[in-house]
Amino acid sequence: MTAATRDLLQQVIEPVVESEGLDLEALDISQAGRRSRVRIVVDADGGVDLDRCAEASRLISRALDDSDVMGEHPYTLEVSSPGVSRPLTLPRHWRRASGRMVRAVLHEGDDVTGRVVAAGEEAVVLEVDGAGEREVAYGDIRKAKVQVEFRRSGDDDADIEEE
Image (cartoon, rainbow, N blue to C red; front, side, top):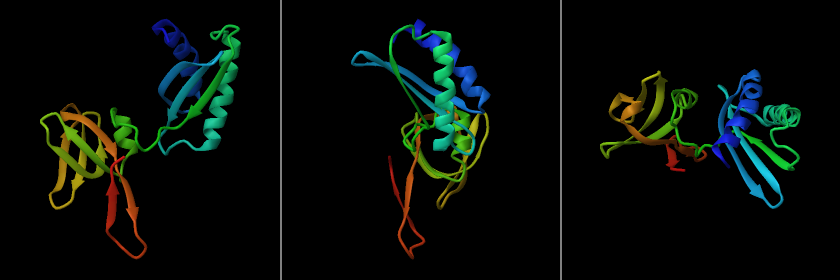
């Protein structure tokens, strides 16, 4: 996808997504045979369920057809919400992970695993088991992801698995 095509698509899609109270997290276009495949990832505080994805898909499809940005070229539109494996890269991602267990790899090489207590514009506060709360500046984080927690029946200890 050329940068110009992506920019045109974003100009059409982003206002529709925002009008629905959603954030445009990702936009990708690729070839799938004779069709183009337009993949869009949306998110919102509280998450995005299947009904919201379907409604966003309907509205985006209408906007794409009305704008003629895709021309006469057939396309397939896929609208989804981010999975648990999405990297935490923006303050809103951290805010939406409130209460979740995360693992952050720091630029200095250390890593911190803890539960998100608070997420501001510049830093996150994690409850680190055995060490209390720790504030970590986003600028100090090389990569971070939510950890999947499994609970066994009758067991209060959670097993954590990295995605």
